[in-house]
Image: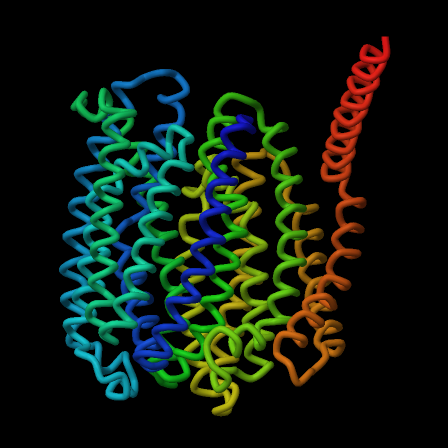
Length: 524
């Protein structure tokens, strides 16, 4: 595996994500302070609706990027050029479909945004601005994927991250000066246009020959791409139904005020998971190249390591999230926006369960086995939506949000965590997933037990900062010993830590010998 390129991709992604996380929190704080929590909830609804419309993307990006790995490894620039040309045409069509779909949603906005009048904004115009910003992003998506397919994710991450920081900076200034949601959204459009310009320059400088080559796709490749697109389209539908359904159902059945509070919790959660996911997603192309060049045994070795790494990251950060989230919301946003502790508990467990899929999803995407579980996301999405609506109708008023989240947890536990590993191990690793299942559900049971134990050990103090520091420290006291035990019990992780320790020891020993030699020389 190209470790140097992989570390560069991960390092740049994580660094920028942390900066963006901090700035995004500042933006949300300004939104709540200057235009209200109702607009904050409305903005979250818009994002969820546009995520729903993005189902039109069909998974084209992942399908064609995967198909590019082999011709890039083989040096077949004509085939890469043909795939790029097909990708460009498809994305222009998709952008048009999303634009039409967004316009078709306009008559239903008042129904979906319960209590929208509290926000005091023009629903149709502001949603239209958000829609335009999304449509523009599809114009240069083909060039982004071309760069990523060559394992240069750090370049596209840099462009998108700087664009986001410019957007956030402009939005803070606009909120302070105008207190206008309209100008807030205009800043988003300006940022997307700047990202388009930068991506265009980088792609033409690095891969101008491929872009100008104008090759036509052959029948066999077109058949393979079509097959993968169909599969990823199903995955896209399932992902949209699961990831956007919760916010839309909360808005429609409970109201945008509650959605605004809920979105404060999920914004911090998604910011954290966004950083953690960058330990995985930038490696897709690197692992894809490795899988093409090597055997399944080496791929399985890396899969075992990344899965243990997946759990350790999740244990430390999700326990920490639960310990300090109420304090963070109060400190960052306002002291009247906290949700019940039962809600923050199920939010934590829900996102941990979803996060524990990252290793399997990384290797599924890199090895192209998404075709083999193409029906899973459809079942997953439908079950999630049905259960969410049933639970929100059946649960008592104070537990309606809990019911929506519990539906997502059940869907993930009994559909995603069964089907996805089975497909990966059977079709890519060519072995049984039984050991994975045992370890996977054992790890989640361990996390749940530690989370419950942590709940009863949290303390309360008059000072929010003191309470945050104490509870954060308590969460580390729970997570670090468990993490150490898990690493020691896992052979691959144990060997990796041992090898790293020996390498570090040899390096320090070499420095010491060199220094002794230098001292001896100076004495002589």
